[in-house]
Length: 190
Image (cartoon, rainbow, N blue to C red):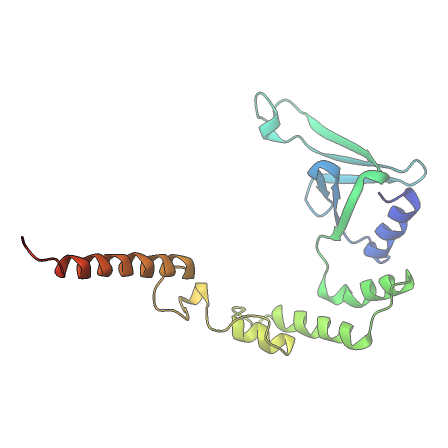
């Protein structure tokens, strides 16, 4: 568990002085997302408590409707925050986040930062229609995706649509059937 000071430093590092929206996940898989409309998050650093004001989950109510005028207020100690992520980071603010992370004491290799920026600039370019396996490999500079299979393009290394495990099972069944046929052909009538 992270203590209050760790959570404050962690949150401030990810927000990078820009108040970037965070997704915050707590123990027991509860989460809040500051980027979603009608979600309001109050960080009480003095007491180490986070408050989340949002619309009630309609599946949790007896009669789902906005007529009841209910909202949900969640609160948790900072100690129960398991992880945070920047929910929507504009690519133009990536350098600000890098600087914030480095100023918190986590150094970045310059080439590593350049690789991240370059890959995302290519991936999010306005003229890019699709991210194929070939394009992802070209963006990253090495082979990270198999170019043999591409589910969405209907391109498969093997001509059949079965998995290897099923193909082996089918071969085994076929060999059993052939051996039965062979043993049946070798029998003579009495």
